Length: 335
Image (tube, one colour):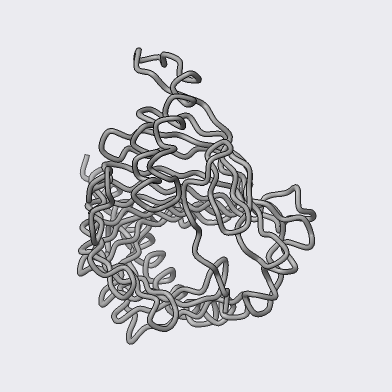
């Protein structure tokens, strides 16, 4: 019995020593490779930096602690992000899956004075490239806007980015897929007939075609020339009494402005007409006729409420619901 206990003790001690040695080996390896890895990302257009990095978490996990972490890049749009504290941790037996968090909050901004968003806390997961590609899921809480987004607030934002394991060989293959879910969006000012708070917004899209290196405007021009498109596979909006869903295809015209053809299903279409009148897109004397025409197209939905399904088109800096112009689009310079 003594020999058995001694053997068991020695076995456990050897196992603990091996585990500790393996943890230390991986910790040193991570610290040695994190710098070269960041430099390799710079070659792909993303600049990563931090004030300090430490490896911790023994014995349960491997955790990287970054202070004053920043990231910036130009694709698919110019961006910059920063966090005073960024944590990334994984288990020793699964180095492809990481949990990330910014417990002190994080900020994402666009170039110049365009503005950005600040989140009180950010959490997420990263699944590194394998047969299904790289997947990034991020949840942000209590976001506030700055710059042109000043006055904007979002209670909760959830986004997902999926990058295929290989770059697209043609405009028919995806460059990446993305989805976005926003809840309780407070607008800087109320919109006539809709109010100041959007209850929910959901988008899911796939960008088809490669984004070649270079300045953003040149990249988008080449992407468009090659036939690149954005497929909106799921879009949903609940804004007061208005509920709408949409799907379709978006692209850029010769002036690199948005264009596209979508199909939208809308409940309470009269709210859109009233908003278009308030915005000067429809003359007040024509509103009744437009409502009557749309009313003839309405049918009961699954919940019994009346809804209409109409084509939505984007062209010449305008948004059209069927034949009616309902909104104007801002011009994009892509500089």
